[in-house]
Image (cartoon, rainbow over all chains, first blue to last red; front, side, top):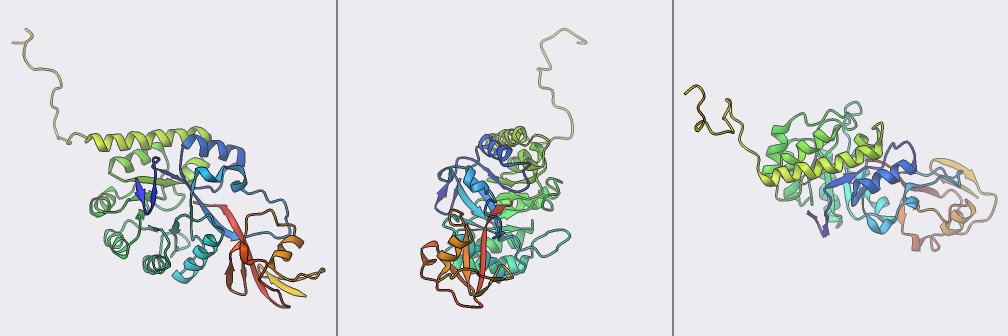
Length: 255
Length: 67
């Protein structure tokens, strides 16, 4: 899979929030074989000289970084957060995330579109997190977004893919990678996204919130691989009635 | 000298000439962080050249876990 100038073997993008501890997180990240990690940008506690950071625990060379603009309520705030992230020197791509509703955490379509345009003009590799609106996804691509990241269901909800039809439409029309982002709760959900033809899956809570995050990281890795293979292999059509797998003739029963 | 850092007005005990010295005084020199000085986002190599004056506004941010 290619996004902008970056090529990836892994189709799993992994968030870095809400793990029980850094050791479990590090193991989960390694087991997942992800090549892309997301982060958020926040104020430091300047009075705490310790504040260990997960970035200190990993080999930075093994990953591409996809900071998000979470916290932004409009395009201008998203651009500012993106530029802060970029100043770190650890911003390969930017995930545009402009939340328009505090309760559902669904993205603001207008501000997402504006932020995407502004960041593209500034030369960023831009991956907008968007709702599963088909027309909006097309408009983001027309602006030049390097990938489209439609949500499966609300962030952190684990409800899986609520509107496979829209996701299918988005995937069918897209000429850039489609990464299903947000709402994935289980290996089944991830495999389903991949079987629909998604190029990848971005998830966080499905791993970090699992009883055993390391095992779940492996399960999701395998599910994404399985789903992709299934997509490439081409599944059979669904039929209403049974069609026997065994020959009907050649045995002397009931004849 | 008083500085507004991350929204808190902080009286600096020591004299700090620039952003690089401030980071040192705060004991955060070995941290991966990003500084915005009076609404201007600085690259690390610009910290030394960013002179501080009384009342300057600073945002000191870093990467935290997120999805």
